[in-house]
Image 1 (tube, rainbow, N blue to C red):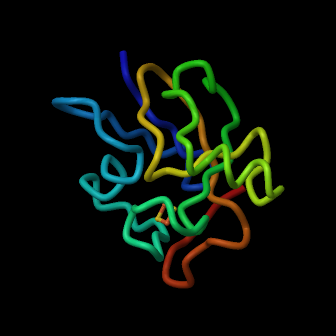
Image 2 (image 1 turned 135 degrees about the vertical axis):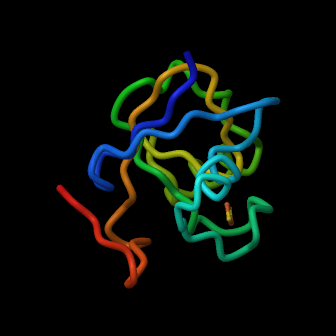
Length: 107
Ligand code: FES
């Protein structure tokens, strides 16, 4: 089973369909707004997600993510939603700094 659970969006569950896509595109295709200032090109970190569970079910870090890690702009428990594909079950959170004002977040 492939599933993304968003902890601080009321444990919302989304199920990727079809071919393997980025987490960002899966979220958007499920009508979940998620910040993505560079349009999903790996040139910002605004699509950052905190991985709570299931890091082993995510694609390996991209070159862009590894570069952000080297510069301490991406922690080891964080991934870029536009650079990451989900291959199993994972639980993520929206970071405080990239919460969108029109969204209602939970704990
Ligand atoms: S949207 Fe900019 S790095 Fe993902």
